[in-house]
Every structure is written in C-alpha cells, then in structure tokens.
Image (cartoon, rainbow, N blue to C red; front, side, top):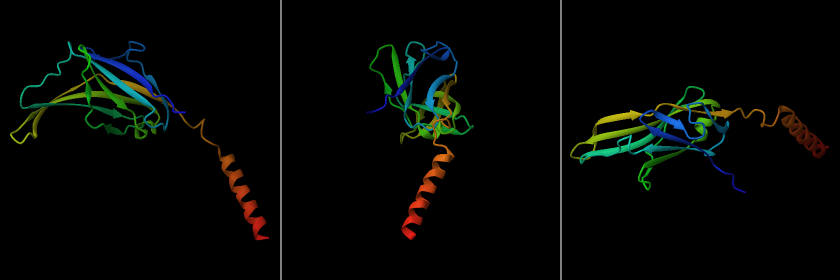
Amino acid sequence: MASQIKTITYTVGESGALSEKSNSMAPQYGGIQGEHYATQLVFQIDKEKVDLSVESGQALAVRVECKDGAGGYHSSGVLTLDNTDTTTAKATYLIPQAITNAGGVAQFHLVVAVSTLDEQEKPVAENIRYSFPVQVYFKDSSSNAPGKDVLVRDVGSMAAVVKQYAE
C-alpha cells in the first residue's frame, strides 16, 4: 500500500506567503524526521499580484531555498510552473530526506528569478524576488526508532547460534 503525500499549500501574493490551512505564518506539520518525499509544498502564485511575465531576452526561473532545522542550506533545482489556471501559477516542491533528517523547524522561501540573457542566452544579470519565509516542522523520529535493547537481543541471539554451531 503506497503512503499518501502530505500537501501544504501556500498562497503567494503581495503580502508574501500564507498557509491556506491556517491563513497564517505559523509553522505547519511536515511529517516525521527522516522521511523522503513524503511532504510537498505547493506555492500558488497569484498572477494578478505577482508579475511572472518576461520580455524577449529574459528567462524566468523558480526554485525553493531552505534552511533546515540544523541550520543547513538547501536549494532546489528549477521548478516547473503549472500555468493551467488563469489566476494562479503553481510551483510544487517535494521535501527530500536531506532536509527532514535535521528535524525541528525548516524555513522555506519561494524564489522567483528573472534573468537577462546575452547573445549566447547565458544569464548576465538577475532580478531575484523572495517570498516571505514559510516554516514547516518535522516530528522527532526517535520515539519510532528501535531501541538498544532490540540490538542487544539480536546480537545475543546471533551469539547463541554461533556458540551452538561451534560446539
């Protein structure tokens, strides 16, 4: 049975990013420490309030940057924008284990970069816009981990088997 992916949706407008669940900036539950791609962030960008248009000679790139619960820095690759809706564009980011391993509260920013390109279509200048930070917390996994007594029993059982065959 496949597990379901948790989804946390934020709306990005003039005022930054707000969770649709609570309509606030409060940290949202993102799952258990150590999970891999079990939670996705969906940033709904209000097209009327955030200009995503680019001119000829420019390129648009959207990514997510994160400071994990231990202070480590992470940056996603370029995300694909879903522009099928006429009023919002959606950027979806699956949270990898590299971020959840730290546990605690991670802080995410949606980053929208408009690059000016030279004749070879290489970026020469960027205009970068960040959303307000959104916070996601990961519950400590230590309560779900097997204890030392399990390892001692396993080691003891193996020692008994080896002793039995040695005799």
